[in-house]
Length: 366
Image (cartoon, rainbow, N blue to C red; front, side, top):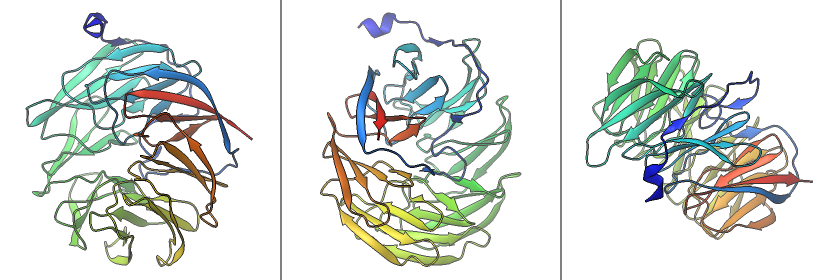
């Protein structure tokens, strides 16, 4: 009842920001790797509560601010250092994907309840005003990406949209098949999978289809790109490696159970989690299995990789610290509830969130 009386506004000062985490996966290629060595202990520094449940997205960071979406239609801005709420935007519907930050712009999509369209917002949090609001055909359930002056995302009913920061439509491509896989982008190619088991690549300049190839089953989660190869997890439990240039299948590996989290990679290997609680390390070049670890809990959020640990959240209220070379569980860190959003490390702080709309920040201690 009280939440209805609170103002719907985010108005905070914009600082010069060399470091930020502007979208899900930091870059258009969706990279969850931090090439640093971290400690294996966590100390809670703050706790914040948002208005609704959380999705399998992540926070976005524009230092010194943290932004988080929720299923009640809110986007909340928190102080990175203290967790204090600095503002919120209230909308009717649900925000499924992480907001994207572009300088002082906060870009997010609200899927409306009982409607077959969404609203795309370009909100200036320096001035505290909506710059543009655009009606989108279909529900926007996928993660949004930003590349240069382009804002790109899929809708559930099969369209791919590209806007500039002013909210002008650059192009709109109808693929004619439903999409539940978030796009990734590299070298001017946008790639994603669809519900028909096709992998589709679009030209980022004009939205024209470069190729579409049937290689598997329903694709979920988010694509990731490394060294001109796209990695996509599927409903059939396979992880597929597809050449970005021509769409040819390089290899596939069956994990045994559905995959909805994003594949994570470093220079040599790719790490894949499935809903059965298994974690795999595979060679990027040929998909050969290096190790497999059964964690004993459902994994639906994307893990985070550093030089010495793969941080894997599960629905058994745990954050697992795995050795990325051996797969051995170095530490099980007990959490207060089911982990819903993907963990993210910014500076010396780990951010994560839980089923009940709780966001927590932890200091990483060596």
